[in-house]
Amino acid sequence: MNPPPASPEPVPLPFPISHGTTTLAFLFQGGVLAAADTRSSCAGQVACPASLKIRPVHSHMVSTTSGTSADCALWVRILSRELRLYQLRHGRRLSISGAAKLLSHMLHPFKGTKLCVAAILCGWDGGEEDGRHDNGGTKTDLGGCTETAKKIAKSLDTSLQKTQSSSPTLGGQQHLTREKIRFSGPSLFYVCSDGTRLQGALFSVGSGSPYAYSILDQEVKWELTLDEATSIARQAVYRATHRDAYSGNHVDIFHISSKGWTRRSREDLKEEYYREKERRERGMRRDVT
Image 1 (cartoon, rainbow, N blue to C red):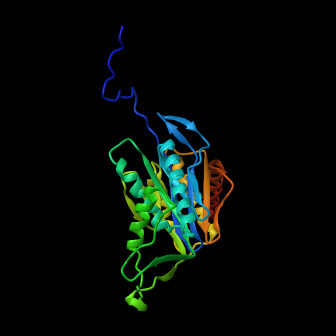
Image 2 (cartoon, rainbow, N blue to C red):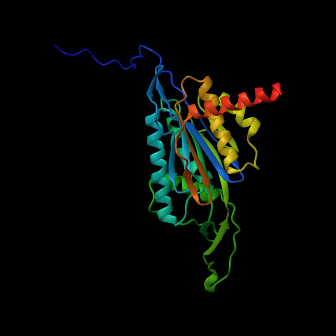
Image 3 (cartoon, rainbow, N blue to C red):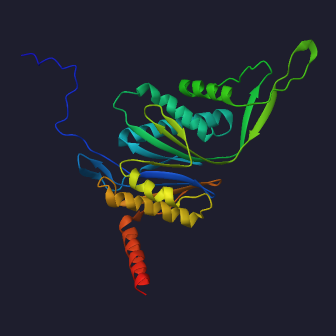
């Protein structure tokens, strides 16, 4: 007896798979601060209470992840590989803007599929951009990278604003010149699986983001110290987990500066609950007196 032919249409799930998260990142005078909860949910159940939603990409960049856990982990690893190949070939790190453009171009062909990735690229650009070209616009060879990295790197080279200089030599030839563009500072980009790429100073992604924005929009400013920024990020995640059932358990906080990224020890959000309770009690006592 032959088995029934396979249906070309995908079999619908017997129940909707509900999931959510809370991730955020913002710029301040000390660099970039990224925070996220640790609860992974599926179909109304807690699949993992201690998942890592902020993943290091290289020494000066991390990425928050929101969406399907497997998709997010895969594409962050692919991005990390491409950036490492670029660094080995050119002797320098690709800028955060370039990394965001690379990830956006790699994800765009999957627009309309079930791929679900929403990432916030948080990093520090530092050092030198070293570009070589002649006055006719001939670009350097991009060997040593994968085909995807080659295409994106070429488009990045054409978008860089470079001052061209020439010098006549024997036979009317022009010599190859080298210029260096120095830059340094924090950068923040949001990239989605449909190819969306946005630059900003503050982002929050996930089902708990509306509640996190209620704190971030009011408290975040450039003049914050590291301790103040950490406290605000922790409080924003706590507020989101208090109202959003799909976010919770713990909070991870990463700080990215000119020296690279550092990770704070994971904190249980119930500690923030007790701190908030103590602040309310102090406020009530102050109102009574």
